[in-house]
Length: 540
Image (cartoon, rainbow, N blue to C red; front, side, top):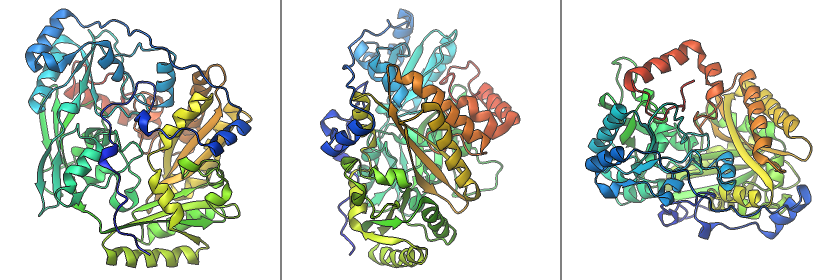
């Protein structure tokens, strides 16, 4: 039975800042439940790690004259060098980022945090940074998990964190064309709340939704949990305004054109290395009348994956479509609040759990639900009702909280993702699992789900849990490298939606070739001749 609309992500859950050593809002962290703690103790043992000690940041290297110049441009209140603010702008939220923070390694702290209030002030900061040779790292929500907020100082005079939180307006809504123009500092919940006032939605819900920003979505080619129905973020973008060290760029004057290459794609995914996105015009849609999420059981991962392919290639993709493998299903990771609650909580008699979500008008949801059900039942799926779907929807943003709770008791947890064509899926799945298990050794859990699907292929999202030992970072980095090598050997993408950052940069050339690398370097040299924009990120 279709339920009325109550389950949209809540704007009230947004918090403006995250603690330096954890994800999210500590008041919303559920903690390890009894069943999860029992599972962890059985699999890895409990080895509580001491709380992170408060350490002093390295002193700001910003010259007094530089601070005076920035204050003249932006005003004194928009220029901060105090430890508290600099600490909050140090790195992102990957497991290595948090481990370094917890060990007191704050060497990557910016020298100053500035908060411009509009496009023109961003442009002025970039002109100043180019003239004074100071690195600029754009900061949206701070949710990067690939080292995208770590600038390589080199011989530059300092590092500025360009906090885009001062640009957080809904600039315009065109209800006729179904577009909206947003500033980059808006967090996901804020943007959805502003659009909802007009009866509209964007519908982009990555796991980082509660804290990630519109600018970050664009700069990393983000892909959300509803991408099967609504598309990746880059597919929603129809226009951009970008500040670069050599001037302003405005793109997107029509829904489509043939006037040469689409330069919007040059800045989407550029991670602040080519310019700072200051406005994003996106395609929006009416708020759905109903949302229905349900679970399906499959006897094995391969059969479920084939069912996903059938839906994608029959133009029957629902709004949400996800499939956990046998291991992920067994520990009930699709419902982080009930991890370890037992196999029956996720799927009966072994096998795999699929989540299917449909959103829209009552008539559209009913019609597509029936068509999807016909395909899935014909291919051997068993409907489990709305219980598993509702549980997934309730906990859809809770995964990072669980990661932090496990780090607290000595379990190393990290994720990685990739994408490939359907014909290569099984090899990629097998090879990445084998690389991780070989590097991390006995007692390691490697879980996987298909997170995003297309007519031609899919994304595989791996979660790894293993004893952290005395130096969890030293355990993880070789494992990540081994998995990345396996991805490249299998001919897959080094990243589907987490971006390149610094972590994936060594493997980018394998995907785009040496000529492709030279193209990126040439663009960088033309748009950022002084090399001050997020140096060390993206470009090999």
